[in-house]
Image (cartoon, rainbow, N blue to C red; front, top):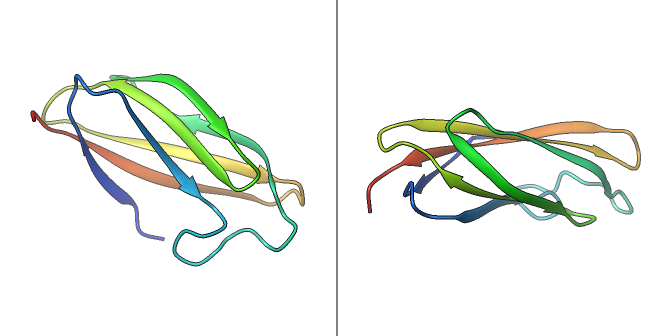
Length: 95
């Protein structure tokens, strides 16, 4: 799957995430749910909070430096013990 690229201002506090059941082609099988969700956030960005439902994962981020690109990675494990990850490139811009 292609990596998303999303702009962010360093002063913004924004949410990012994935719908694992509906995004692109659905990844979760019928009856399968997300058991755990872990986010990897590089130095320079701040993870303010994160959450998950049975089918979605969300992270709130702040900070960053204009001109930098930060890759965040979300890894999930499901109730059927399948493991997968997806990434988002956060491109820092001055708005």
